[in-house]
Length: 323
Image (cartoon, rainbow, N blue to C red):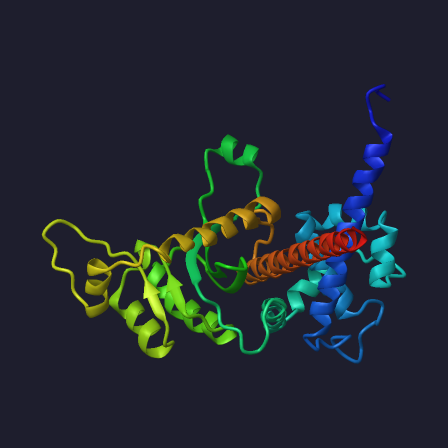
């Protein structure tokens, strides 16, 4: 061992990592159980593991950004995690794979909605929601193989998300297998995220410039829309709301759109922008898992900050009262 290796700092880092893992699992358990997912898939189930345990393990795998084999090996060494999940035996990695295959996408949608509900009360309305799209790489062969064969894979799953610009919460997502125009994604996503949590204003970039999008937001969703126009020289700007954007553009609320780009950056840096599944349906479930994990991670950040500031507040009060 190197004489410069600090054993105490290494132990402290491991303790912090373990405590973060347990906090995440506790948060994931409360969210998953609130979905009313049945403990077992059918009456003929072996009943070795509940569906709660398996789904939380899959979310925990996404949280750690690991492959199935590596993840299960690590869980076998985490006694605290096993106790929190009440696991008598660590499942084989294929158990998680098969469970994700047979799990209905509806339950992942419900789980995602429950993560959004963590941040709001019943009547809360989001001031500004930002919408944007990006791609998650769909591939499973190594970079070396791609370089050697000269076939660099560029296939991706286009994913659009809506984000509360104040809280940094993902309020909706939509996935398609390949290239789809932004406006086509936006129409479905707008209705979806507005149904989950209403918003007063929607901001988007020029790729979403369309009179139909403005009309959908203004007439159907009864909200404001801020979308810069795409214009070329000597072009006549058509549409009532596109003309309104040209005359008086809201430069105060539009910069909030950058929050959705930041959220994509967080998703890809912390939870990876590469998909490990090969089948499109499983890839969609994998993306859904990333959205759920990202919201739970955000909620835990809020919780820690609240505890920290509350503790400091009481320290100040005690100090002032002592003086």
